[in-house]
Length: 425
Image 1: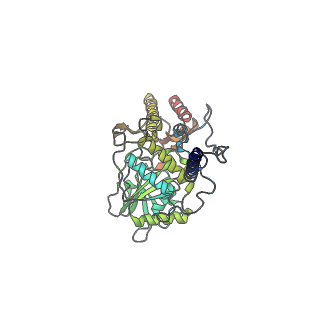
Image 2: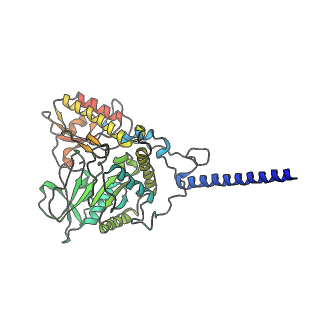
Image 3: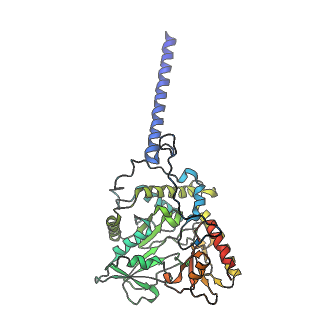
């Protein structure tokens, strides 16, 4: 009888332990599904939850027109293909349905996970101060740029605020500023020739299109600034200081390569300016996609984890990958230009990078290529005749003998570009 009672007692204990284990396993599965998205990437326990890939641009062939007009950052596809599931997210159909993300936060449509990972990224890289700043999210940095114009306008006398930037300036600044013909602000051209006192100066650094490091040129105390830091990342330029300006704009597209996610963010110091920017986006698009924010947060987390959790693994370090690819491309382009007698590029810049702890050369995302060939007045048109699409100097406020060439496209497109440029005499 005693033996049976002992056996029964042992069996009962095993049953309790087994029950607890099952409950813990169920809880772990629930938590994974609730916060990390589904059955390890499966939609119903069998079929992998995937989406049909977007077509993008057609592949480059020997006879293709090579389109390097846009800064389409497809160079990064190689890196993200190698990350496996570390940057993958599955969003169940019932999640992210509400308009609201964080009703107790400063901006009600910013996903807390996205904000946390963005601040983590800036602390890792050291390119911007995040303490004391409000973080806003936008549908790309262009929407945030428009929101900042709205928040900083009009002038105190009620007249439209002049918007200026030193030439060569980003080609979209004039068109975006003037698109709505707003009474609040207007494009007023090259900041080097601005004769007034009150204005908004756009400081793009590194500069699009020529890669120069920019500081404000307007000295007036009534000048307001917007710092466009889309390319202030270690793969493009040495990180020499942490930006601490009033308004700083960043974008996922040029940091990680995910242009199709259409997401940017702003770091804004003044609370009233930040509130006005939030109001603009609230009226403009009623917030920003949660799905895009959650995907961007996962991607940025993968970047930070690659440096903080496995820093010795080269395959996990995005900025080192980007720096290596850009350096290789710039080396080939400079060699090709040197071998020619009709082209030139700006001088190479370098400096000590606080992120990589060594002196590095700048590798701008665009080549600012000038033509010295006799008889060529329209350089953009000349390259178009040779099946190379670029963006001509007049769009950036300068002459027609210079063009902007994207350095961010696929290896196939870049190789074709180099071969065609090398053949031109």
